[in-house]
Image (cartoon, one colour):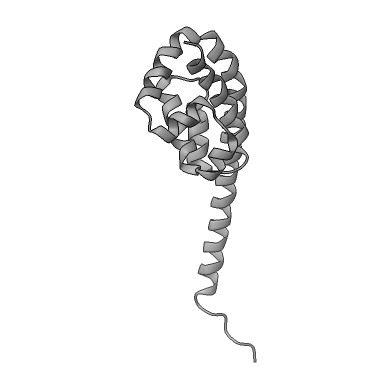
Length: 138
């Protein structure tokens, strides 16, 4: 005589299936956001140089208003600092979005979707390095 199936089992299986589908959709969205951020980060370097005279005063104003630890990072950005201070990446990208640095908005969106992760560090540095160069030329 076989045991009757538990009445909650079919519902649990359905929930697992729905969770799996949602997870794969989120993973796909994250991959798309990461790829878009990668492309825009590459284009940002040239765009910052092209718009340097327009962006420099905005970057200087953002620098003047920043906290001391952020000022230090803005002058000399390092991936190590971002690894040790994951919230700093979001703060710095928000500053760059406000300044109008190309690609910063897409990267901030990817960061918000996926959270701090190693794959975003090179992209963030690709955007942050040319932005920091705006502070060096006065």
